[in-house]
Image (cartoon, rainbow, N blue to C red; front, side, top):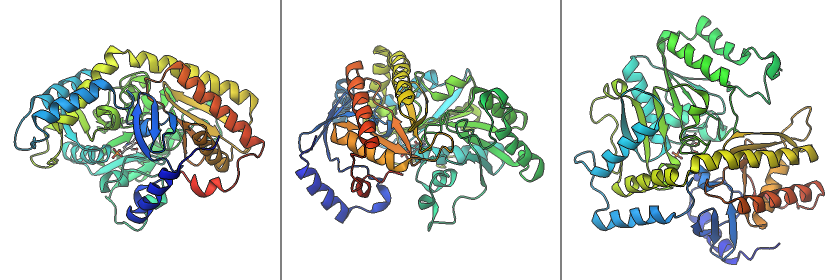
Length: 450
Ligand SMILES: Cc1ncc(COP(=O)(O)O)c(C=O)c1O
């Protein structure tokens, strides 16, 4: 199928003239016009099934009528008055909901922000202030955002970190447990959590645990290819933190808000974090983030150590309250879990047919499909990923890849069975086209990914 994208191309060329390259990761020249549920239309009128949810920021689908209504009502009353100096009811209501739906049967408090990035910065400040320790442990392959603090926590791209130093000091990275690409050559049957020994060794030799404020972990390492850690790893790491007075913080910006079939990804691992960072889907794409932490942690920082003029904007808070209601009323946690199982099953059937698929992993509707040149070497098949995503776009399916080779399958949780089937059929047909050599190399100039 050839798309008519004349107007799209025109906008993209103007954009290239005007917009700084540092904020773009191109896959295809899609210029969005409108969206409903799991469908997106571009400015030329082409329609696409969305398998990306605006980078997991629109879990209840695009422009959900209840969210639109909440936004319009609030905008008519007042757009914003800073909660740094005043109070508003929707902020309090939303904080109550967040305290309720986040794991942890203890007293919690909330601080709002504008994006996942700034709330991760807040997590660093709170952990350091509460423990009186400076060191933070994060993971290789983690993505926590683009502010100085969160970029310092991240370790996924040299481009992100070069030319801008010095970064926030005393942040240390350890390997994320990656069973499919286990650095210790172990299989599930003979794994003794060798990967966690790395941290235990550091604690013995050069990283004094009593100087570590927090470990920050993504419950699934999202942008590094949707890597699901073993349950026993998360539990043991959590206990190690407990034994050493280290806070256990989770970044739920991508995996939260129903994506994994639970409100928060960490609930799949049965541990209760001290600090939870939330963003993206909390307000269905409106700029809002939140830190939810134990009350005693929240009380150590004095004002105005973490305040933003436009934080907890009432329109965003109302959008978030509506989003939470939709997830509850429409049983989207259940839907995500069930549909996620179905999608994994379909990809596993493809895996039986195409050696290009090395691994299918994920929880709920947060699924990664790891494409490899060779199943033994597990060499990443970047070209295949780029070509397949581009070809899917031409077929009306928005699919992206990350970690060079992993197809990112994170559709809105409201996607219907019929839509997901159409999208999966398009992916399979693009895989076949790729294997037949039918997708031209020119595509690689456009679909760069990261
Ligand atoms: C796990 C995770 N944390 C933090 C962020 C940063 O969030 P934002 O882009 O809203 O600042 C992202 C964004 O992709 C993310 O995936």
